[in-house]
Length: 205
Length: 172
Image 1 (cartoon, each protein chain N blue to C red):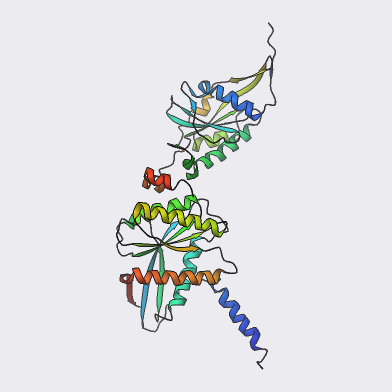
Image 2 (cartoon, rainbow over the protein chains, first blue to last red):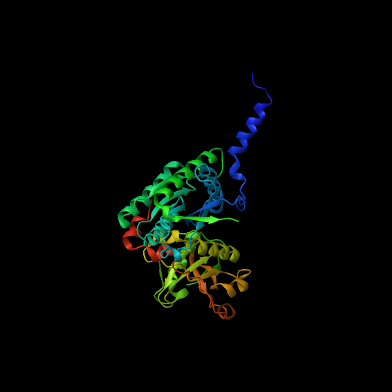
C-alpha cells in the first residue's frame, strides 16, 4: 500500500504541471554549463484584428507560453534549446529570406482572415516559405473552421500556397495545457521540416 | 390663409431623418447626396457632398445636442473600421462630422480643435401640421479652426488585396 502522503504530493505535481504555462519567465535562465545552446528563431506574423475578443488568447501570452512550451518539449531532443518567437514587422518581411516556416496568429473573424491573408501574401514574396495558421477568438469550433477554410482556399487559389492548419487555441482554461502542448509539437515538426537552415549555434559563456 | 407655426419639441427619428435628407442641399451644398447602399445607422445618415468632394457624417437630434455629438463620434469610430469598407464599394470613411442640433453640443469647441467636427443650428417647426426645418448658418467660431483630417491611411489589407481577392475575402 502506498504511503498516503505520496498522493497529495503527486497531485500537487500534476496540478503544477497543468498550470505551468501561467508561470512564464521574462527570459529563460541562461545555463552556465559552457555547453552550446541551440537557438531556434520562429517568426510569427500577428494578424490580430481590432475586434480581437478580450477573452481570446492574447498575442503576447501566446508568444510567452509557446516559447516556454517549445523549450520544455524540445529539451529532450536538444540539450539546451533556446526558442525565440519573433514578431516580424511586415515592411521587413520580403527581405528576410531565412524564415522558412512562419507561424500566423489570427483573430477568428473576417477581419482577422483578411489580415492573415494580406500578411501571407506579402511574406510569400520570398519563395518556399511555409505558413502555419493558428486562430483564436472564435465563438465555437465550427466558426474557427470557417475562418480556416476561407483563408486556406484563398491562399491556394490566389497564391498557390497550401497552409498548415493549426486549429484554434482558446484563452487559458482547463484544456489549455494539452492544447498548447499539441500546438508546440506541430510547430516544432513543421519548423524542423521547413526551417532547418534557421538554426544557429551560440556559445553562452 | 393663416399659417400655424410652432416649434416642435418631439419628433420621430425617422421623420427627422426624412427632413435632413430633404435638406441635404441646404446643409452641404448643391449636389449633396446620400451614400448609396449605406446600411442605416441609428440617428445618423452618411452623406457626400459634391461641392466639397468629401464625405460628411451627419448626426442629428431635434432636442439633445450632446446626444447628437456622442452618437456621431461613436459612428465615426464605427465607420472608420475596416468592417465598414466590406459593405460598400468605393467606400470612404467620413472626413467630417456635422452635428445638427438646436444648440451647440457641450465640449464641441474642444473637439473641433482636434477633429473636423462642426455644428449647424437646426430647429424643427410645424407649419400647418407639417414638419419643416430651419437651418441657420454655421457659427463663425466653429469653422475657423482648420480641421485635422479624420481620413485614415489605407491599411495593409486595402493596399494588398486585388478586386478578386477582395471578393473572396468579403465574407466567411
